[in-house]
Structures are given as C-alpha cells and as structure tokens.
Length: 437
Ligand SMILES: [Zn+2]
Image 1 (tube, helix red, strand yellow):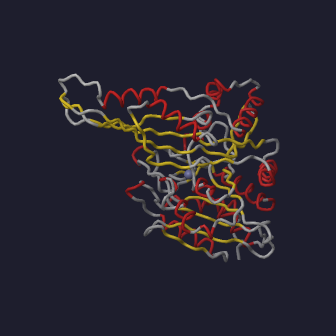
Image 2 (tube, rainbow, N blue to C red):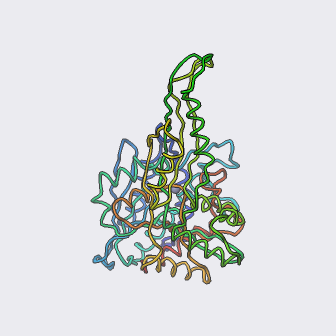
Image 3 (cartoon, rainbow, N blue to C red):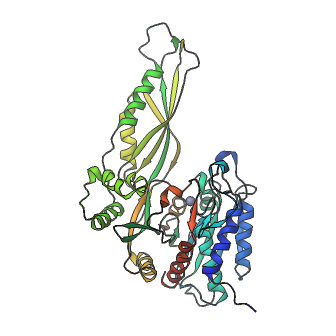
C-alpha cells in the first residue's frame, strides 16, 4: 500500500478542489456553493476521524465547526481556534487569463478565485490536520476548526451569526488564528512576516440633508443639495491626523530598520509608498478614513428637493471610535445629520505572549533570519465576530512569497494565484506551530 500523502503533497489538490467550488458571494443578493464546500471540508475531516457540525444561518449558507482534540493533546488548556472562510468574491471570467473556477496549476502557481483569499489557508489547515491525525501527532492543545460562510459580505450569515447564535461552540477558545497575515514582505533582502493584530472599525454612514423644497427658479437659502454638497466636500477633503497604535509603531520600526530610513508619522504614507502595494493596505491604517462614495437627491432639474443623501465609507482606528464620530458631526455641520447604515467594531490585540512567541519561533524555524512583525488591516475579517466573544485574534496564515509578487493586489484581484511552494511552506510552519501553540 502507498504511504498516505503528506501535507505538502496533498495541499495543492485540496486547494484546487476548493477553488472548483464556485462559492461566489454576491452580498445581499445571495451566494452559492457554500454548502457544497462545507460538505467537502467535513468529508476530508471525516476521513481522518474528525466529526464536524454543519450550521446554516439560512438554507445553504453553511458554516462548519469541528473539535480536534485527539488523545495526547493537553485538554486542560483552552482551545485555539483556527478559522477560514469558504466563500469568495465574484470573478469576471472575461478579465482572467484562465477560468477562475478551474483551479489550474500553471508554472508552479495554483490559479483561481480564492487562491489567496482564502482557500489557500483552508487547504493548508486541512492538509496539516489530516497528516497529523493520520500519523498520530496530536496538537499541543485542543483545536477548534471553524470554516465560515459569508465572510466576503461582512459575515452576518457566517461568523456574525455563529457568534450570536452559537457562542457555546466558540467562546471557550482563548485565541484564534486566520486571515489576513503571516505572509512575507521582502524589504531590502530582509524577509518580514506580517502578523495581523488589529483591524480598523467600520462606519458606513448615510448623510441626510433636509431643506426647503421649492421651485428651481426661486431664491432658496435652505437648499438640501447645497447643504449636502458642502458637507460631503468637507468630509472628503479632510486630512485626518495620524493615530499610531502599537502595532503600526512596531511595523514602522521594522520598516525603518530594513530600509535604513527614518519614517515620520506625518508622511508615513509617502515613505511606505516605496514598499509597493503593501502601502495601500498599511498606509490606510495610519489614520481614520472617510470617503464619500454615493450621492442621491433630486428628481427634476427645476425642482429643489426637500432632502438629499450621501454615502460615506468610514473606517476608524481602534480606541478612537468616539473621536471619529465627533469629527464627522463637526465636519457635516448643523444642516446635515448622519445615520450609521452598517457599523462594526475595531479589533486590536498586542503582539506578545506565548502565542506570538510561537508564531515567531515557527516562522524562524522554517525561514531562519526572518522577522515577525505586527500590522493593522484597514479592511475587516471574521475576527470582528470572534473578538466580540473575548477571543484574541491574529492574522496568521503563513506564506513565504517571492519578493517580486504583488501579493496584496491579488486579494479580490484578477488572475488571483498562489505559489505551490508557498502553500507547502505554510504547511511546514503551521505543523510546527501546532506543537508550540
Ligand atoms: Zn478573506
């Protein structure tokens, strides 16, 4: 009989299989494939004797929770959650060089929607758990495996629903690892591994200007369109002052050392621009942001409407939520009010303690001389839901990447792909980490 496949051999097949489930999430208008993907994951776990529970917030919006606590792991320790989402953002096939849902391997890359966000890590987790289970190597502590639906729409039918309706399945976990982090960034030959320890909060706002409706030919000093336009202009052109949290300070320090330059917080974005597209992810975490994104009002050119509205995509720094809203109130003035259409918490932990030490040690064991550095994400993940249960969340989905690969651009990008070698590296690091975590 052939020896069972090792994680490094199996991970590519698992990743390709997962990509072939089209799990496109179209937001409020629905999704597809999440149940099939969850059943696939459950079957792969079942093959090595791990039972899963499938949970649906709505028909076919399927998430999975499984307990992996084999004989030999220390059940006196609280479980560690390892989580990944199975949905993806849609892909416009005509823009791609290859079918986004074929899961092809070309030039040592696995191609397809989800290859980096985040069927890569889903596959790494499955591969490592399966290998250890088959070869009788328990993790140091119990592992709670969680695969979610609906992350790409903010998780109301996935992580958010699970945390609200099934906290009993999750809340005993003390820490969690998942996206987005653990990938390498090479700066002047120094390989940094970016561990996500924080993410900004979400404030999608609707601005509402009320005025006096009337004929477009008359004088009108209480024009809702004018009030709104002034408010939108002030919000959009406001330069938010830097608010540097410990994670970004550590990140900036590491970049300073690697680049051999001083970074002043006032022009951090400019200095970071030298790092390429990672600057887009990290630069936006130096301050709050509030971008006007939608405008609405009026129905005929000679009628002044009584109301006008605008959409604002606001993202606030952890610990400064009140300041963000106070500033918005000030900027929009007395004639305009706002309502929060969608709001969610900021997430923040510190990069210290045993688990951070375990991440650093596992990365250094696989890539000697590398450095693990915390950073803050400008976008949101399932970590928001887990953090509400008091779980410390880290973005740690390890990948060693070729220095020239514009990794950040591949998230939700065209021709999304991941190097086979990076998947195999991820397996080695996660495997080692399970002995230390
Ligand atoms: Zn993701």
